Length: 446
Image 1 (tube, rainbow, N blue to C red):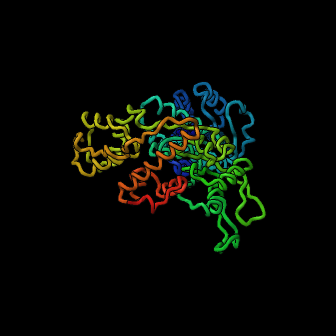
Image 2: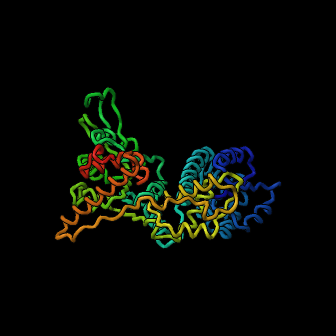
Image 3: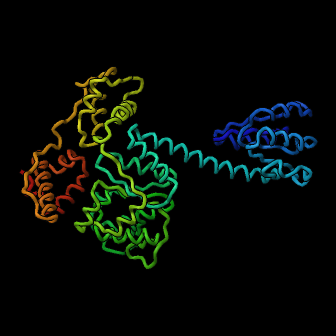
């Protein structure tokens, strides 16, 4: 919060102002001369003052014009808030010497309102700095990303965050939404298809069997804030139609309702899918893609920005190391981290560091302390003859994906949950993907 200089000899009013300002942890310097001489005040005005100056006109009635002139001369950028019991009694003081003049009663209301607004701005900046501190890395890709996030914060258009699983899409969403008090997260891959519309837009009582009470949806819950639609690529087509209308009209209609409800929500969506391929396969609406892709954010995988690994590893060490127990990454350990391909991206690196801190005494982390699953997600490639057209090529890609998923599930002894954990996917998302590929879990299990 900005500091304030307060010039007065009225202890009663100054006590009130100090009480108000102390509630927001402000720095207030009170200038109150010991006698009627203005020399102490005149000397103070020659020094740099705070961005905000509160001036008691009644305390310096005879010297107001001269003292305020000096204040303006030596501190032209300070905002001067003048007040008096009866402001009209000081009409001889030029209005050019202060920014605002108020009665004492008006000062109370004005000051509390302004301080409340300053507190909101201060909190927003604090949250912004805290969330941006999680976007760690010195690569050019991370520098561009941080700059794009700062720009996105200033706008209200939809944001589409693209990147592989584990690259930190949720952190980007939270950083962009730092100016909102409300932030609602929706995992689109975890909502049963039949409940999508009710979850997002709500329903009235009796709208369908089992709807015994009215329920507001997640969009209405996020009204006035931001909503994060994670794994938007898993949203069923019928819900995509509804979402498109929300973006176009800023309105929702709960199931069973006769009227629409206006909402003001910042939409942030993310996916690890290639939405253009999903559009080609008619699993994602092209018009919705362009509505969401107003502000695109592309997150690079960790294997493409290995210069960020050292900063990220040290960040996770600071985050997970027990208090007072220092850990240092050795050069051999850092090389081992940089040589790994990181199929699980930042989430995998986080797990490796957290595991090492759990099983290692404080001190230097060596290469042998880092347990990295080098065999994870390594499936022998399937050889196919050259495709004659794109459709044939795409079908062979899907065949390869089917074999990849079946092999992974079999390696996990038929457990879809364990396979989803190895693939760093949500279990529901894996089930949905198997269904889309025409695979039955019963037939996949060994």
